[in-house]
Amino acid sequence: MIKNLLCADFLKIKRKGFWFLTFLGPFGVVALQMVNYGVRKDYLLQQSNDEWGYYILNVSTFTPLALVLGVVILTSFMTSVENETNAWKQLIAFPVTKISVYLSKLTVLALLLFISSFLLMLFTLGFGMILELQGQIPYGKLLKHSFYPYFAVTPVLALQLWIAIVSKNQGVPIAVGVLGVILTYSAYLLPDWMIWKWPSLINEWDEPLINVLLGVGVGSLLYIIGMFDFVRRDVK
Amino acid sequence: MLSILSSEWFKLRKSGIIFIITAGPLVGLIIGLLPSFPNEIEINQWYMLVLGINLTYALLFLPLITGVLASVICRYEHQAGGWKQLLSLPVTRWRVFTAKYMVLIFLVLIMQLLYLSSIYGVGMIKGFTDPFPINIVWKSILGGWIATLPLVALQLGLSIFFKSFAAPFAVNVVFTLPTILVVNSEHFGPYYPWAQPFSMMNIGGGTDNVFFVPWDQLLIVVGGSFIIFFFGSLQYFYRKPI
Image (cartoon, rainbow over all chains, first blue to last red; front, side):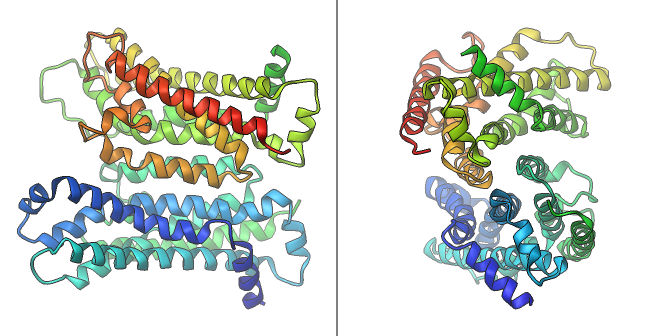
């Protein structure tokens, strides 16, 4: 059942710009560094002895922002397929459970974002090589800064998917998303318990892994709450 | 014209617009109350506060939320053939577009005024004793409003073009995010339309003019992009097959 639903969901996102956005997010994040390094490469290289480390740090200043924006846009886009055409009724009328409908939407989104994170790693590595940065390539750090934010953003994904699926008016999830983006942008000011801070991998203990574990844990919890809310709701 | 405006107003009342408009001042309030702006230098306390909040509000929030407002205002028409119904009335497309645009800029103005009151509120809560620099804050609030006029026109056009909410928002994000880098650049900052809300709200700029940016920059960049975006969107709406 879930396999068929996934197939259907992948068909629905065809030729709507999903794949383009999946590519654009990581490309944009690295492109901003292309501009940054293009304008003032000499100055930036003087900032630190660890050229690769400093470069990856620069890239990752925009990663949380792009990731949260990506979550907001993709979730709203994903549910707008059903919302615009009032197709929820038709979809639920099939011999599928509401739980699996919800799960399938989440799986597609999680997969798209995972591809984004993977592309981010490739682009970061590629542009770093083009820049001919000195020293050993820190693969561990590269992996961390590409995939840790992905797991830490899970609660935001679960929350946005919940709001986007249950609201008739897609202005609501987008407005909540804009607030989330603003909170992510000011992450360094926020207290540690706010989910929008986690993708930035900052915390009191200076241990990014805590954000990842918290993210996956709270994300699953929010996902389950959202799913049961969706199951209990009437489909209009 | 008046009847189109009032019908827009009726459509708006049930669309949850209050929630979106109050989000802006709320952001200002939250960021302002976070303990983050050390006031080490001896200047008016209000300056530091406004500088700090504007950094987030004008740079990202204002350009992004105008796009959401524009989508909300076209929502009823995109549902179930609303464009057909609206345009079969004895109205011209020019008037429909202008009415929607006027409602939008009115909403942004209200949001700016609420933002002003939230700045004042933060100061009151923190117990500022310095005199409130009303002249400078006014310039900032009105300047930010004027700078969003072209962006609102473009977003309205995009919202008419796309049926979904996410697509115009995505376009908006693509243009707004680079602002974070662009405002640091002396060469590109003054010419980038999406950076203008920040430049015009940033109270550090030259204070001799009416606004915080030189007149020629205001006229060429904001005025020029307004003409392009407004008439471009209008032209598209004229030709849009309903």
